[in-house]
Image 1 (spheres, rainbow, N blue to C red):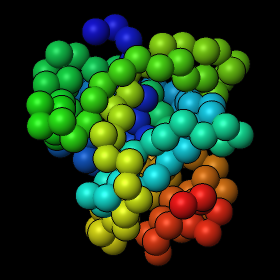
Image 2: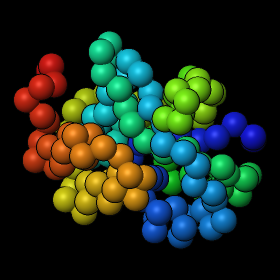
Image 3: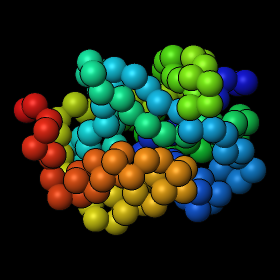
Image 4: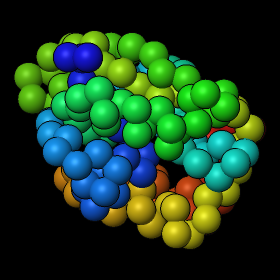
Length: 150
C-alpha cells in the first residue's frame, strides 16, 4: 500500500506509533477540508463531514505489518472503524493527495478518558499542529465543545 495514512487522533502520537508500528515513517502535516473531529460514543476519535471545518493531522508511510497492527487496533474486523481513501491536502504546497483514513462507525458524541485525550493532544504537539487546533482537542477533554451542533 503506497498510499499514505492520514492520522488525526491517537495515531499522531510518536511514542504510540513507535510501539504499534515500529519503522513507520512520519510524513508531513495534512488536513481534511469539510470534515471535523469528534469523540465517538465509545470515547475515541472520529471524524465527520462538516462544511466549513477541517481536520488536521499527519501522514504516515506504512508497510503491510503496520496496516495489520492498525486494523487490529482500530477494530476494523469488529466494525468499530472502517478504512477509506479520502482526498487530503498536504500542508506543504496544499497538494491534494489520496490517503487512507480510519472512519468511526459510531457517530454518537461522547467524552474521552483523560488518558486517551492526553495521548491525542501529545500527538498533535508531536505533529506540530497549530495552537488553535490543539485548543479544540483540549476542549474535547472537557466534553462536547459548545461550538458543535448536537
